[in-house]
Image 1 (cartoon, rainbow, N blue to C red):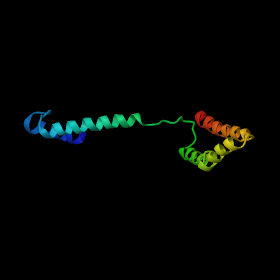
Image 2: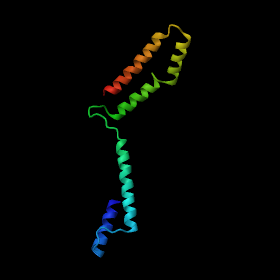
Image 3: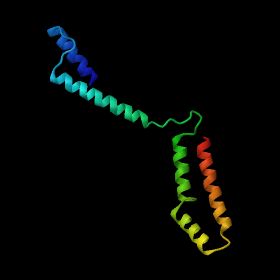
Length: 111
């Protein structure tokens, strides 16, 4: 968009002496440039910057999937809820689950 705008300005400047033409085409290009700039600013806000000493994203991805398949799996959580409801001595199972989940969360936040 900016290169087209520059070429219009240069063309009108060389042919008409007006380097800032106010035509429908340039107005449309200015509108497009403004929209692109707003979109870029919005996308910049979405960028997540990871600390320089953090492990590669692939490792984080793998750990998250492993956690979701094991500790936080639907079956595991449902069986824990069932055990808490039906077995009075299931407190240790709940504590172990909470410890595993908290340790995973702490590890993610410390990297």
